[in-house]
Length: 627
Image 1 (tube, rainbow, N blue to C red):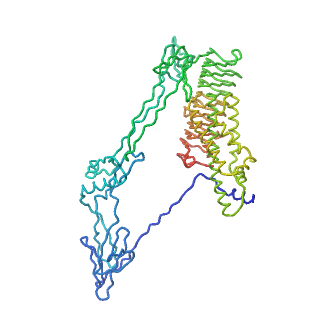
Image 2 (image 1 turned 60 degrees about the vertical axis):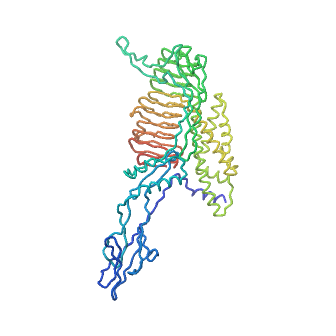
Image 3 (image 1 turned 90 degrees about the horizontal axis):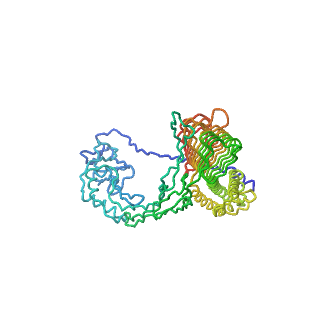
């Protein structure tokens, strides 16, 4: 039995794309013309009237042939095939009714549209044709006079048959009929809802760091070119704007439409900020203003620890509850950790940097480990691996359906767990690796002394059955797989809300380094060589000449790259959840969810985007190789 099942699974094709070919057959009716003798009968249309003339003596009787576009009735019977006709026959005709207008309702049920077709101004008459013994009746369009009142009444009646409960603009209908645009016009509309406005925080400080070159005593001051936003006691750093309710409306069916319930901002002030009754956040001490938090926002003014020079053995490692500013380089084997943002005016060598907020490096990174938004970073990594597991389980379900169908047709008994185990081992080996990675991230969260959320705990338990081939054999039904998918979907939604607060890392270039953030990574100059980059949002190489040579570049959303790969050396690995833009690429291994593309030839201005509906990678150019 196991051999049969293995062979069936081996032949199962796991594919995300399908091609459907449609063939249309055009039927043509041909009537062979024959010479008309004086004794033969004939049919003729002259002055748009039909004439049938019987034959003389032994002449041929005239025949009519059917025409798809004109229905012909002979003595009340529809002409379906070649038929002889006589002068005494009663012959009538009609053309299939043309669509003269169309009324539609918008998807949001707020508008009724009318489209007038040119056919409304036309009727048909018999087309003049010379006499023939073998005849096809044809019609031709001509203009007609419209009964305006009758047409408008018909359109209005058609609209009301759709259960419309609001007034119809008959003036608009008349205007369109008298001076047609042959475009969709609105003839009735409901009352749109005025949406409610959520509460929000209006910040009076900038979160961006600027480089400004100033002249001091005749020379350019490069040392103090970085301007960090700061406030003084009494400064209003932000204002809480309360939510505004909306106003209801109604659709074209008369159904009431209610506005959304506005969300209120929940904000708290830390000890260095005062929050007034009218929603103003006022700084109590000098420092850098900060706004953090997801469901609850926190205002703070961070202290600043400043080092006027390099960080080395003379300064020691730095652990600070606030911002850290280094006006020099970070030398070999040093470590800096801070709860605020980290600003480095020089380069970083063989060191470790950890910041709860943003990191700005106005220099290069060499053989170092750098992470920003540490707690959010865990969620970003877990979000990515959860997406991969969820996508693989969907493919697994599709493959299971194929295998079960084949086994059922062949009347082969099977163990459900054995099928799942064999499929995962042969078709989806990455599943167990991703589950192992999920466990690693959850353990890292525990080690960081952060409690696991309920969603993570539930998903961790659900994934245990996929942790080894032995445990997979115990899966008894699709329900166990489905429940795991539900847990993953809920966790992914939770992750999406938790990683909204992004911490960014900005640097000039990096070599043989590991740089991770739950927000953006911004590479301002030369690029990266043999480095591992991870972003919970997107990775942006600002210069079109920035390079990616070797290494691994991962972004939950997008990658905007300059020059990717070289003609020699190892190809870099790029992963993105939504889009990858490359100004120039020589070679690269690209992964988007479960889909992979290998590029091994030069391409310019290449854009790859993930098509979620079809589960495939779309490209603006022909791809050389699609795995």
